[in-house]
Length: 109
Image 1 (spheres, rainbow, N blue to C red):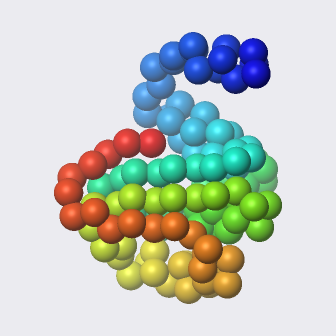
Image 2: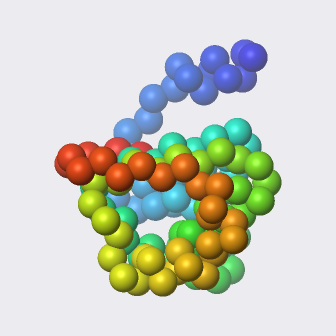
């Protein structure tokens, strides 16, 4: 419990490349309980997986779901065609994904 309290009491400002490295490539893939994502626009994002190859971000989400991590996504507009194509590739795992379309402008992670 002390470890959790220590993490909650730590605030760090990150910007630009740090968001990609610390949040997208490190924090999200290592989640063990849940991930909540909020964004204004769903893009067909490709990320480094284990610092080896580029994969769709949806593959990272599918990996989390396979491990039993709960994932919730709140997005402000419908995803584009490239995102939907990747979504279809991972559909068997993403069926348990809790998504919410909220037609307002939001941007948070």
